[in-house]
Length: 234
Image 1 (cartoon, rainbow, N blue to C red):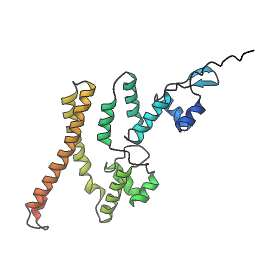
Image 2: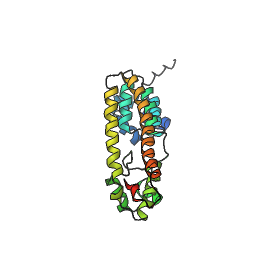
Image 3: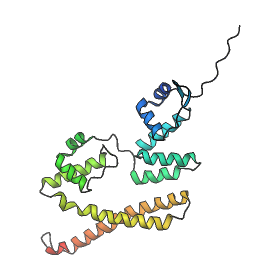
Image 4: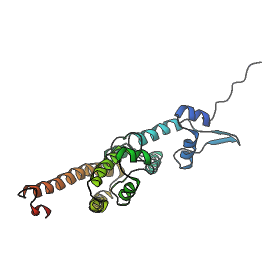
């Protein structure tokens, strides 16, 4: 009697998805809970299958996390747009320009303190003052570590966190004005044009901040007689 061929499986079991993606079951279940992955199709109370397309989706999530440093909420929004048929390539390029390449593994709090030389109290004060601004909760990247070490040196020379708080205050004002300008110029544009113009504005804003602040500093120094000249203050 001929063997009846088995019907094709409707998808991947969880253990297969874990093996093929390299991600733990807990992460995959969290992605389903957050809407990053579709819910499985259940064929019985103990049998569930995930679409094979989940592997490509997981690879994209990994890329957006590791190479583009995007938080999961941002990734969720991008995936929604892609599911709606939108080309998200311009948005990925924009995020690459804003956040830069992935900075390696994140440092937990204790590792960050060891790497920077900051005390727990100093770290708490810098976070409260908005002078350290990690992009993700529970971890510090290499840029955070570089600034943390810089702040540790400044504090060791007698500066106080309050002495540096103006950087956050004035920086926030600049960013608020930049965001208002971007909204005024791009709010009426389709998504792709919005992303393209925003990319130009991001590059222009970075160049303008650096140029104007450095030139103000250079002109102030050039106008003084020497390092002790009180005129350097104003």
